[in-house]
View: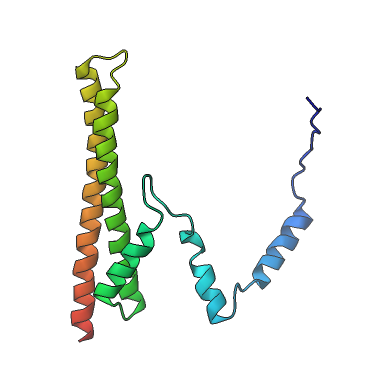
Length: 152
């Protein structure tokens, strides 16, 4: 096995930190509309949930945007909340299925009652998450209707 080279990491000096801050203040990010559109999606690039089909976020977004046709930034934000909450609800359904099948099937070293208690704890956490997503979806839809009524 080859010997590994040890790299000594030094902390930045005050002079380097000041230079970094000065340079950061100069940065304005992308200037062109297409550059801004591309960079605005950076955070979403790998935003997949457990057990989620990689095509689902784009499909749901197209479906919701096609149905609600948001016309302002605030409407787009509310539709995005509905898309995300729908994704969370679907993920929770998949998690519940996995909990039922794995916790109750994997009773190695445990009684069936212990496995059921463990499954119950996990299901309760998922249930709370699903309820929060449903509440967020309802609230976003209610706010979207209110925004549209106010705009009319």
